[in-house]
Every structure is written in C-alpha cells, then in structure tokens.
Image (spheres, rainbow, N blue to C red):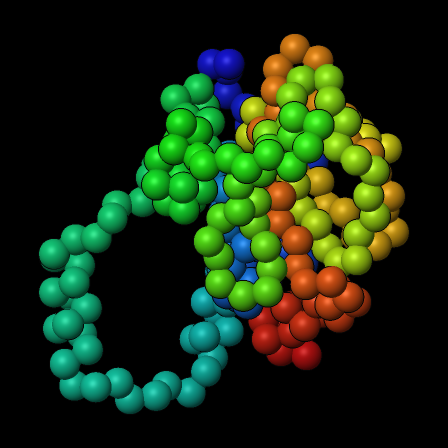
Length: 221
Ligand SMILES: [Zn+2]
C-alpha cells in the first residue's frame, strides 16, 4: 500500500461535523476521528479550513477583551521555545497504519496497541478519551462479520487498513462511515486483509439533539 489514498476516499465527514470540529465543540472522541480523517483527506481538510476562516471572521467582529499585559511576551516565548511541530499534511500513507492523532493516544503505531478479544476473532482497544463518547480501535479479521447492530446514538467508523462493506457500501482506507439510529448494519471485513478501524460512539440516546447542539455555538443560532 504505497499509493496516495486521497483520491480513493469516497466517504467523507459531514459539514455539521466539520463545523463543530472547527468550533471546538466536539467531544474528545469525535475530535480524534475528525482530526484523523483530515490527516488523510485533502477534500475535508480544505472544507474544514473554510469553516476556520468563517470562525476567524466571527472572532474579528467580536468586541475585544483586554488580556494580561504580558500575554504577548509569554506567547512569543512559547513560540520560540517551540512545541510539537505539526505533521505536514497529508500524512504519507504506507509509513504508518495509524494517523498521527491516533498514534498520540496509543503511544506508537499498531505494534503498541494493547488489544482485547471481543469474540469471533474481533479485537478492540479502547482509547483513553475524556467525556461520555467512546473511541476504540477495532481489528476485524479478513472475511469476518461484525455482529449485526443498531445504534442508539451516532457512530463514526474510520477505516485505517483493509476495507469493510455493509448496506451503505464499501469503505476502504480513509473512508468514514456515519451511522445513526436509522441504520442497522452488519459490517463485513473484505477478504485478503484484516480490517483496522477507529470507531467512535456518543452516549446512548443523546444523539437526537447532538449535532444541532454542537453546531449551535459556531452558528450562533
Ligand atoms: Zn474527507
């Protein structure tokens, strides 16, 4: 797998999710999956940047608030001391299975993941995120079906390696499936390669108002 994945991505994030990400109102688990998809997808990154620009324009219209006298000096000092430099985007595919945002949680790439068996050869690793929303890596053996399930809330699944198919179509590396209460599905990992995904879910029964709530501060409605 050495070819660039950008052109292969056909399932993207929704404008609502990108807006909420830009506004900084997403639970940590959703923040993680959005950042991970953006590191693989030029199209969504460009869209997210356009929302950032809108947010910036809104900020410019806000009346200014005085900051402490030394804030500028302190910020410049922090910049000079340097922080973690951002990884140039898009991440080069083929070098890592896990995008940078996920590696930060795992403490390394795939070999650092501590898997737990959940049956039928499927393994999971919960990632330590704050809040009610959960983030987990899934390892689904090639040709294996994940037990049929519905959703009490919102579930996003980002494919990192391999592919799976369900009633919504085929999802390959970089693709993200957005599933809600309407969807009953039985994802089946494609033959030939084990499928590794990042899946995030919000708290049960909290979806109905979630997206409007998340977009609200940004849209100021
Ligand atoms: Zn995308």
